[in-house]
Image 1 (cartoon, helix red, strand yellow):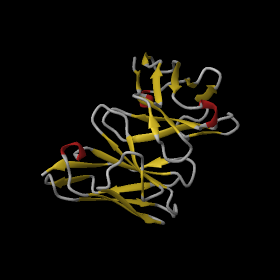
Image 2: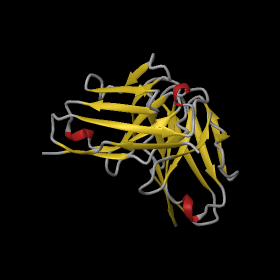
Image 3: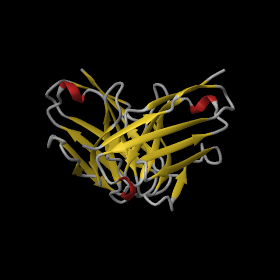
Image 4: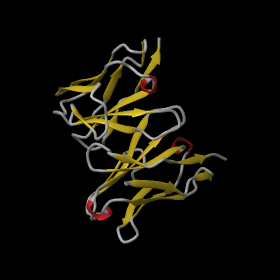
Length: 116
Length: 107
């Protein structure tokens, strides 16, 4: 069974940093691309970042480029999102999601709240 | 960036009836479109990919169609669990973009 589980969310002050993790199981992690997608409270879905299976290809949305860094450790079956210079508008539930095109599997999400 | 526009924002339908949701892309995306359903407090679930292919386990009453810039999700015989929010997403270009969502509510 494919499972994805995010962790690392919490309350952080504006300008602060946070590192999210996504642990996966049930598939050969290294052969699949992964994404981070976020959803602000009461709002729609926003794609944040993408990383290929080998980490050779990475993309970011303009809203996080230069502040967030996506990475993965295939030996640990884990995906990460390092978030720096956090802003109020980064407050959202962050989901990790599998695949390069349509997003077939999603985690349950972790809430990041940026507030003073 | 490709802008995805969903209509209507809210659709009122009676249980057992059909619902038709629309999604428009600001430029052609071929058939590189997916539909998701999101229940309150849960992660989205993939329903349709490649515009019309149902994901594993998705009932036949969900039907996707369209190509280019105009897409439709039709849900037949609406059941209680269908009265939630639906999103379309294009994966033709980077950045990936979602529509703003259509909420299907009980009439």
